Image (cartoon, rainbow, N blue to C red; front, side, top):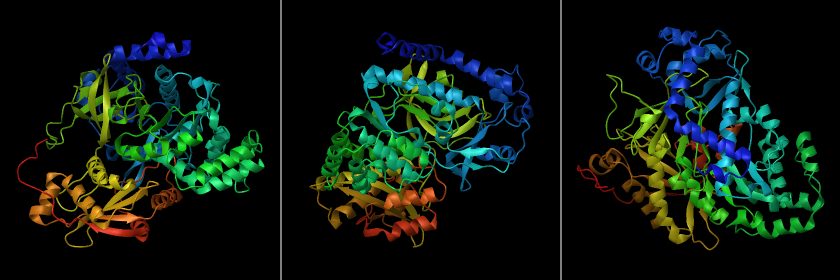
Length: 590
């Protein structure tokens, strides 16, 4: 990277740090593992495998097994129940970070320690120095970011259990962060820290409108979160405009901290109120982001993995603004960052920073059944090969050892000695009727392929989920679609939507197509079109049951009966595949 092109001396130091870390990838990794084992050698878990301070990397791999959450769950439960002995980590477990993944229907609890906040802060501090290389002048304005927390719970032993971003936003690292002209938000901290999602969103949107000409970037954690904010504006623009015209905050906002912080900037502005009415009163929200916030240079949202399906809708609302995916992180660990944040979303690769944890990679070949005996050989961070896919395995300072995260990554290249990875998918199967196994990436690809048939009509799939309906024989896949019709669009004919069903089936794997075409063990795929706003209701329902608004992602498969009932109650039309997909016993040519 061009350290000499850094915007400030501080930026230059951060970019130099990235260069140093990535040039010495393997040395840094060996040092990280040695530190983790040295400090945690007396823990119950490592003693069980006869690991001590002198254990080297090869011995560690030979002695300590590769594990999943289910393997660690008994130890984690003991900590959650109040056992303070050094079970997994010598440092006290300060809290549990609740993963968006689940185990036996419950959110996973990831133990963490106080110093992990410092480690995560290091990665956060690298993002803007990299972005400043590509987008100049970000210190001349502000960022409109829709950020949220959720109310936390406590384990039986009294430790907080909350999403990783709630932990970060409630920490002094965020609340007491020093002024940085490159990281000024329009949202008051009081609004971000409000657990009432309506009041939080209302205040953040209002402050974003009041400071609309200062906004240089618009973002949320996930693409779906930014779309939720646009939907909120569609529903509440009149109330927001009334508040701006009068210079007083709606009585619906009762949180005193929010009222106090908004009062500092809310003054009567009839011109701005009239502008908002003129822009929002029509149903045409195409390009609404750049119409309301005309100085926006890019969107800062995650649009990789399952979030890629939101790209067309974001392009519609933003007028085609670039979308920056800046970092790769999870509840278990913060991994790395995108060194080319303004690249096309399809080209996003993340450089894993070797100082964050100790990383190993389990070779993943989707065409070959995994062999468990003998156990597969895991590669170190510096030894992976370009073009190959791997499952990520981590060892952390907080007490996860050779833990399978479940992410499948593809190596796209190297920055110095550090590999760069494209996120492929979560290692999971979301739909299955018989011997078929359809994963999230495959379902998403099928939706994208079928939705191409809607383009001539000015329609797009805004959101989708699915279920494997086994109530009939044979069972079949049900896909729920919520459609967005552009201003001059035309609702697709029934035949077109029927053809979308077949197009999805043509995109499925050979086992599915054989089951449909040759075996008759799977019935025709069904698309159920739901009313506009249905997925908003789905999210509200999930939040009412304790989901984090910040980490919420639409489930790509639903099995919980009340959710299926909600979706089915909003169906406006149902469509079935009119024929069987093509299948032959020979492999498809690629």
